[in-house]
Length: 354
Image (cartoon, rainbow, N blue to C red; front, side, top):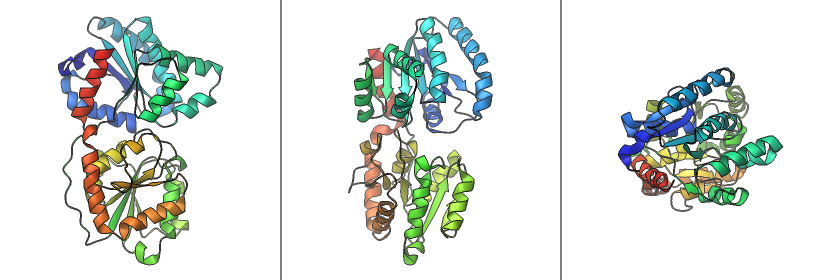
């Protein structure tokens, strides 16, 4: 299958026009680059999970009719999913695809899939095994994940595909003012944001005077603001709420260091985008992050929950501006395979093997 044959593929996933998150971001990037040949069917229309649950039977019926009407034109159904609610929805779509005997690619995102599978009951485990073992191709985000799925399941048609980003042109960093630290992600403990706030509070006053932490995302916002106030860092922490595309590009341009102290991850889009804008990374050694963060080259690894390590990593960069510049340039070099044109070329090769 070559580039112009994307019109024979139907992508299934959350409505990338209305919903937020990593999968929506990936689909939006695909859609932007593929253009008119991007065929998409939404599995979840809105952000509200209760409304999506009520709409699911209608979406499944609509999908069945869609497949019947365009049966001869469609070669592959490419399902993007994650764990928990995302899996339950996508499994229903998968059953329809199997009923009509179309080829299916299952593309797994999110960092909690192994935990989801291990903690599930007998029926859910059977459903997960059925979907993974029966799909014609399983796409994962890292070598670590590939090894996990090869060990746990019988499907050996497993491929690694990078998350895509669109090329950006970074501007030179301004070091005359405060150094901006950037966190973008869901506001919850799993993303390590509260550990980051505690690390900021531990910094010496002279360092605090030289930094500004910018936070973008949605989630436990009330708890975040309370932590910021109680730890006395409100003057150097700025919470922006949810960040749209234009705001995000501007923040990357103005920032100096990207921080993501997560407990679970796949391959975070936010880190890839930060590398595109020549930011060094401070992140945990989990999921696919070791593919893009090389210690002493473009970033610093920290352990999940290690507040002291986060503090020391911040100090290492703030006290050495040249390291920020050098590691930022190195980030830009490493991110080349993640540009969308390279990712889609590899995806075409995967399709050709199915």
